[in-house]
Image (cartoon, rainbow, N blue to C red; front, side):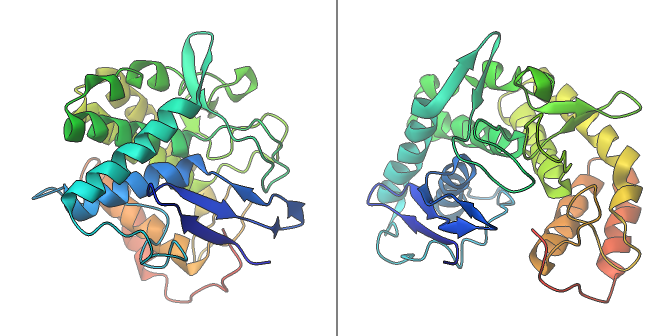
Length: 281
């Protein structure tokens, strides 16, 4: 069965993976999908003159029941945004010195139940910061420091990062010490973009420092993601799908405005004319 995503009456998405790449996953709540859906409501109804938050899902195609529970105005969008944020707050786990969202089902790259995601963690933090603004309730922003504290913790210790050869923090999209250590490029870059956003929005120097280390890691390993005619989805050289190659270009364009060292990579990936087959992530 092909992957399908739906949204419930509260505006919170759930995913039906069925048998996904040989794994029997079935129907699940995805931390990333819940966080992104909340940010989609913000993009559509609350951002005013701000740039929209870049999202990994194509929310013009998802969920499958797009029109069934689509908010008709700002009041309904506010309710749904806060429902997504409430779900995240109810499902975050406390660890020794930090908080983290944990996936209870297996995933690709031999990733077992109990994995974490720096990508999802950063996007969740972005949503909670906005939920505090939209609602006027500071309780939504209260966990931000604890959520940020998970980023420098090594994957082997239940955290979200590994160290590069130069000592920079690589934020793992699928943080699991027993998986194939894929180092997914879009996951790192989404984590960095989320940390930059939280650093500005929540006036957090910790988030800004983490983002700086993640950017250094990206620049250090970017040559590993250049296939000559296309970008790689992961450190092992798996070709990105058209969707994720385009995401890479958009991520690098945003980061180029923060650090010009990303501009040549944006230009290179944008110029690579021969599209890869849609076999990547």
